[in-house]
Picture 1 (tube, helix red, strand yellow):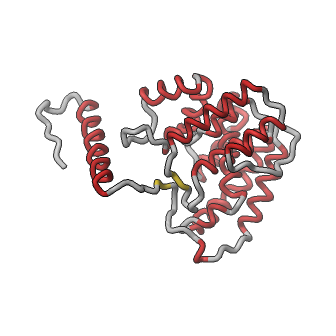
Picture 2 (tube, helix red, strand yellow; picture 1 turned 135 degrees about the horizontal axis):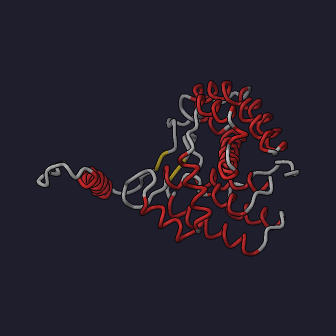
Length: 263
């Protein structure tokens, strides 16, 4: 917890080296290697709104958690924090489900999966940030650890001014003006002064950064760069609609069994 956050890895190799230099053992390295392989499968073709590869953001979040000497389970959860929100499980669905949770538990274990699920359930916006800050002392230890992952995510998002390269970046700056002091204070209260210092410094730099307009991306949020053929995209669209329509039918048992599926 006493290390300054001076380096944020962006590749798996950089993260592996950082882990070794920080004194994590072979078992820890195997855990992160396996988690990274899973992330590669879940986030193929994904990018942040800035155009930055999504895997780089995930690695960066994990790297920040390494810098503050987090347990390896928290580091791995940071690497996989967007699993349920955005991960591609091959069925076109988003969000948490029992099937997905069981699959992730088999891949990385119950403890890491539990952090990921709790992270997904953590509401994060201006009003929720205020509420969390006001009740921080009442949070259980796991909730505090999940909040730590969230703060690492925020630092990674802003450390290279990446969010300013997204479309409608002014909305991100408005959010920053409203919540930055809360996040800095949360890091302090959680017992991570160097994380608080890094957040405060990066937030100030982002607020004063000028980005060339022609370098900004056209996306607001994370997205998938679809390189498949038109036929593959059409089949994928049909599968997505069919899967969601069937889910609606099976979730509502009171519907007539003759319900039609149309495209």
